[in-house]
Length: 178
Ligand SMILES: Cc1cc2nc3c(=O)[nH]c(=O)nc-3n(C[C@H](O)[C@H](O)[C@H](O)COP(=O)(O)O)c2cc1C
Image 1 (spheres, rainbow, N blue to C red):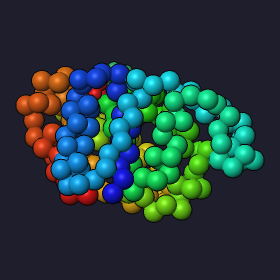
Image 2: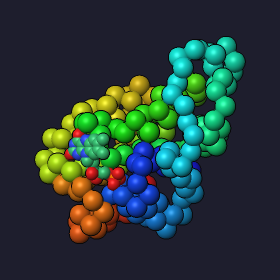
Image 3: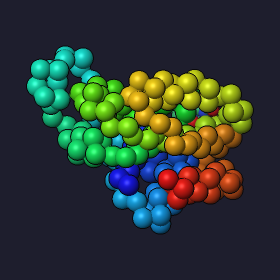
């Protein structure tokens, strides 16, 4: 399968990066092809809501690093969204990219894709992830994507916290099980 992983943390070696790394290792070991897009290393603009895409065959009027992933996004069998919890939702870095799905959303809805959520947060209570999970489910429902799995890593403020946890293994297993 073709897998697109989109990460939303500003930390190259942060907690959610560990989940992404492990998920990708598991998926690669299982023979899947993975393309990783780290939002923090790319320039992406927010959606302008201009609807240019609606009359221009899914082309977005903006020229930025979304051009690196349009084809990958449309072709992907699995899209993995990876984010730290920021004020009970996904990071703005990731949300910017998700909003840009708008340009190709009818293609995404037709694709019967699967989706994965990998998220980390400092709060030790799983309830801290409720709004993020509800949002993720709504996105998947709207895009007609099946949820393939999620890893919600709570109580991990820093890298050392997640390194001492089982969450990395859960992410690896999820990638390998796709
Ligand atoms: C702007 C900001 C907002 C945050 N909001 C929350 C939050 O709502 N709940 C929570 O438990 N942790 C929150 N955190 C903590 C991060 O989710 C946590 O440290 C996470 O492990 C960071 O992931 P990263 O290392 O991949 O960037 C926030 C951190 C930042 C910088």
